[in-house]
Length: 117
Image 1 (cartoon, rainbow, N blue to C red):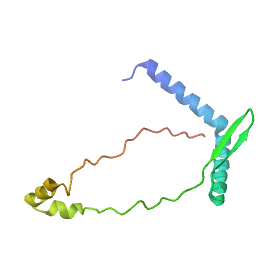
Image 2: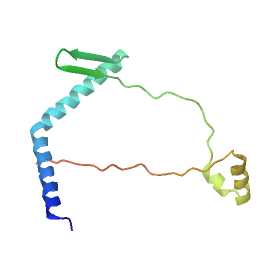
Image 3: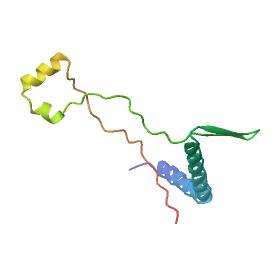
Image 4: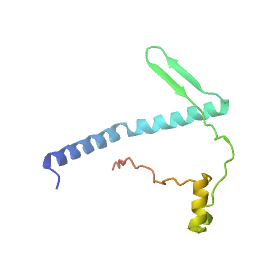
């Protein structure tokens, strides 16, 4: 059971977050719409740009860029490799033609979801 102080701090922080969302949620949504429009402009023009406002700040915009083909690599069919005899797999591993790598899931950094009623 968490200490009461940590529960109070948790609740207080959550309430502050909810209050801020209620206060600036519409402005934040408008900002996302404006960003989307600026990205579309940069994409349509085919170049990044920035707009500077003296003494206030700068807005830098980069448009969408499709992924580019970097090359073609051979791919091992893992199912077929694992279906080989242990001896044959070991031969391929020893030759350096095949190597084993750990496969891990991506890290989950947590999330916070705010629902305003």
